[in-house]
Image 1 (cartoon, helix red, strand yellow):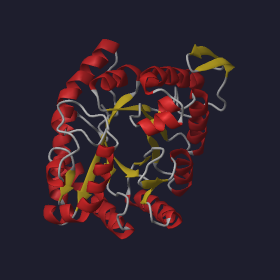
Image 2 (cartoon, helix red, strand yellow):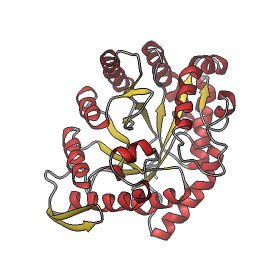
Image 3 (cartoon, rainbow, N blue to C red):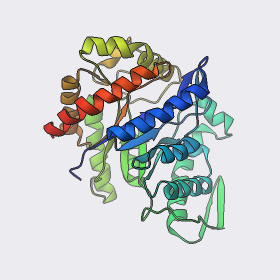
Image 4 (cartoon, helix red, strand yellow):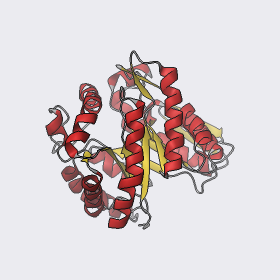
Length: 340
């Protein structure tokens, strides 16, 4: 595994129903430029469709715009709901994004879990795994072969091509998001790495990491050089202040996740808890010293080396989000790097 530890930042492009989305968009661009100046290594744009009660700006056009605002940073799709989409469409869009970014795009993909999305795209939920796997095989082939012959239940590639090819060789990194055990085994088999999500408790992730290692061994693959973990993170001068400041926004986000029936492992205590209980072994909240120690502990327990930090949520004043990432960069980064 590479020794370099990277810090990523999640940008949702989300707003509450009554907010001025044009203003929020401009604030988001300023936020991305600030993250670039502060030394963050990557920007992740999240993805959902029909994201009620939130307004949500869509992933691909936002990543293209971020490339202009922060040309130094890697850009991650975190995550594209792959069963809903055409593999040729995804292959060509992300090859284009790789060219636009100078070879710094990451394709993060996941199954999806919301009925409203599957129904809207005309995709039977029962077919999501089959479509996911076929799409992923097709995208890799389109990125690496001149012409592709491939037939699946939901598409046919008849001498189909993807030009231009991505700049990264053999192709951009493919991060597979997974919460459930079968999905983690699938990530080991088909992905460049498991993209560990934000919601599952660390204790459960420790068990799942052993499952992931066994699945890698079964596939004849080494442990990935890059292992990303996404977490909800908030820092302030004290833990009590951090909880007070973030609870209204982070709590509302996880109430929405719970109402959307997000897939969770059986040994996780779930998302339908009060906020204090929900924090538990799940979120990284506290002073810079406390959160740095939590990050170092997770590094020791799981072996992750790219921390994708979610630090703002719909409704949060932009001034608070800016103060938070400034403190993270200036006080948290040095503590973590020193501890490494």
